[in-house]
Amino acid sequence: MAPVSPPNQTVSELTDRAREIFRLVVEGYIESGQPVGSKTLAGGTGLNLSPASIRSVLKDLELAGLLAAPHTSAGRMPTESGLRMFVDGMMQVAEPTAEERAAIEARLAEPGPIERALETTSTLLSDITGAAGMVMVPTREARLAQMNLVSISNDRALAVLVGEDGHVENRVVDLPGGVPASALEQASNYMSARLNGRTLPEAAAAIGREIASGRTALDSASQDLVARGLAVWSEDASKRPVLIVRGQANLLDDTTLGDIERVRSLIDDLENKQSVSELLESARDAEAARIFIGAENRLFALSGSSVIASPYRDREGKVVGVLGVIGPTRLNYARVVPMVDFTARSLGKLIG
Image 1 (cartoon, rainbow, N blue to C red):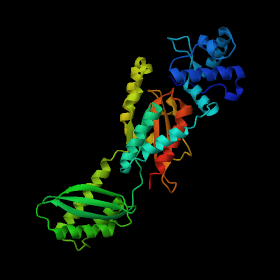
Image 2 (tube, rainbow, N blue to C red; image 1 turned 120 degrees about the vertical axis):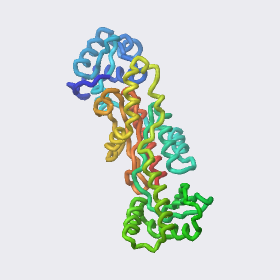
Image 3 (cartoon, rainbow, N blue to C red; image 1 turned 90 degrees about the vertical axis):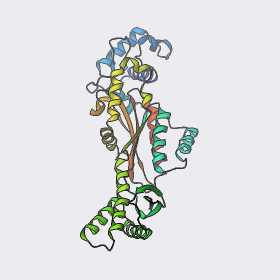
């Protein structure tokens, strides 16, 4: 769907007849992905207008920049500007049913680490909207309580990191052979004393400064263990994805087969996760879902796609990430927007 200039009219300036025909065209296009013709509108929509009268109104709406007529069809489809006007001024949202809300909360409440909940959320968004689901990994760093190094073999140890909230994660650390148990204990005590109440980057910076200045009583073996223990966690954090995307296959349906270049462009855009993350970041300050339609965002100008994004907050109300969906501009906005908002609230309840 090509971008167009802003429409020449607002919803309030349309006649009742034009507004109703415009609504039927948009809803028909969203449902089928195909242009809607005057014969379809005259057939079973209750307009009680002749095809000729409907064609006249469609022409006016096209001149107003709200509809477009593809070369291969006599029907009309909304422009991106027309979709924006529909979303902002005419759409009646359909809130999730009690059953849908319960199903969403049950999926997210499955036991496991928060990383699994984030992946589940992305998959869930894809499943319930028929688009691709996206979840930004929380940027907040957890406050830590302690780190212990526990020997599991002659050349390996388990680095056990404990958060202030009781969350525990383990990573395997490679060791030089023959490290005494006393060195593991000394390194564990040293790190725990300096990790307590800090985030991992804060603690690593403080420990690095202390060791570099020579103000530590650690022997060389224990210093090496501290460096190894911190390194495995720092490396792990740097490899964590900033964005989890699931359901790209949903972007390929019968209506996209004739527009495969657009879909290829969209999938290429999704591979550039940093750029997509920057788009989602722009929704962090929103009170509810933000809607980006087609060329309104430079990233998706070529693929002509829409993004619906909503921030999610921790229990203290602080925004820790953004989630959303991406799909064709004919997304069912009335259904998807409240689904995205509710999923954001549900995920936020799981974030400590």
